[in-house]
Image 1: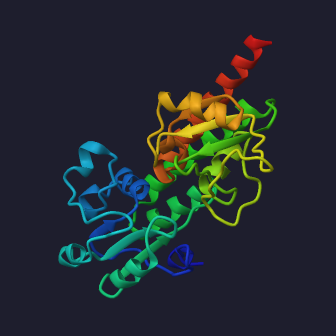
Image 2: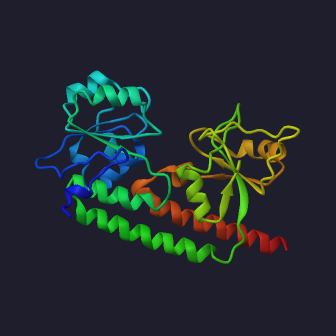
Length: 275
């Protein structure tokens, strides 16, 4: 099997390794970070305004609108050879419009921690950064095994992971965030949801039954002042968690797994001290 035959994105589109220096526009924050960590910062000719890491590097890359409202004419003027997008984060109609003049559109849709391995292979293969991608994959595998060892003796528990307020919103179990938490033994609520980001509330007849409430620092900027309100509303202890660590796939995924291991160990230590 040739290398190029393995380079299929989330839509099944086959990509070939680049033959010349690529000109890349990334509209996905975590993937902009991944491209930089693969050594491709110099090939990035545009990014979304939400692409903020690595901070010292991305400040030199022109902004091309947001994730949902890309500046199509600015992107056209940048003459990219490749556009990097995500099914959840970017609007299909805008991606379709950009595909009219960008030769290669790479569509991503990771839904579980292990999907990062395919992401590393895809980007490493397309942009000829195989060695860098293999190093990221090795680090990810080590972090995944460390999380398994750290949590293998801990009981699973139900958590409500909040991403928004007024209305209160959570994540469905088919999202990347939920899969990350599940890898650490935290099963998100609600158990079933037609919406990927459902509105949740504690109302008569619809109890949440969470054992812990996790308030993410993004996209809503939950802070310490929200903890008491969330704990009272949902009837469970509440804590802040770093949303970037739990929702950013790509090169941040290994750090996210290690962060989860620390959270679960802290939870276990607190339980022992109370007991």
